Image (cartoon, rainbow, N blue to C red; front, side, top):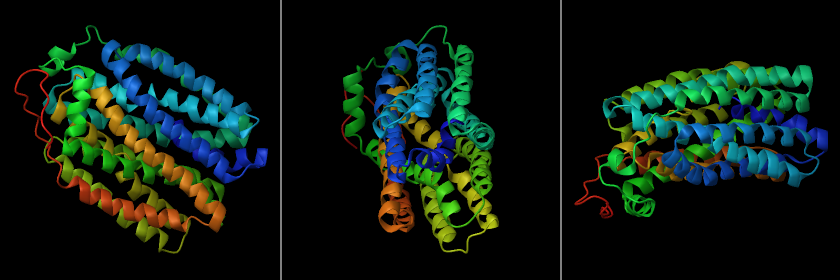
Length: 386
């Protein structure tokens, strides 16, 4: 997670090195996020069936190859295939959906939301740690060699994955109490109104965080701020995200997750509105980054804990993958529209306004979510739409 949060730092050096437009890079990042979501569904199915260990090893290898391909891509198409498709697949196999499946199967329900908050906080600390390192690598080695160094570094996932080996993976029947098939689990989830609302909210989350993460470094540079301001800003997002995700997970044990999610989305809309209407300076950037960091990925433990609470854990990685696909469709639009609007208007104003409006929308749609567990009449029998 730490590596992928720094990709915005490559927007200007990579596009200037190849004389490409910002929309070209933005489209590659958009494809990456969409691929992450699409592949995440199938990777989740594999992880639910065979465990996370094998998935993480394969994901780490693809991650390294994708970073190397991104470093030496010579055409926009090659960039789309490497930085886009390959890295999207790699992230699907090395991040939350896979890890949360392990947590869901091995942590008691009364501690599950907290445990997911801890995992999200670890990913956030990766952002805090890695973004400044990535900035230093670009400055000292050059943007291509920095990607090569990251390719080697991400192979550390392989030995770490041994810690997520499960001695005896629970069967769907024992983990869920009913033995649903994949088709039955999907039919039940997509007919359930609260699942649809969770997907809608997560769409907005993806739009906001990926637009900001990829385009804010260039936005700040366009506004005349020094390049290191962007690195420090993204690092602050990661640092405060550690606290935000942990707090969200802990609060999820004590209060309705729908209220946590609504608060997060409404707050994001307000914080963005204040940021773009306030005179820009390093101080205002750092304040914005710290506050936004508290709200950044704090949606992740609350959303995934709600899915586990409603549907059980047998198909948790898969269902989380589908909700995350919605997140990544939003990410695709956020990063691509940011580049599209900039290339046609010369600024990011339209993208900022859209991020605010979507935040209000997400805050509203999360309020009616029902978090109580589905009661099934008998085993895999599907629950009706709610």
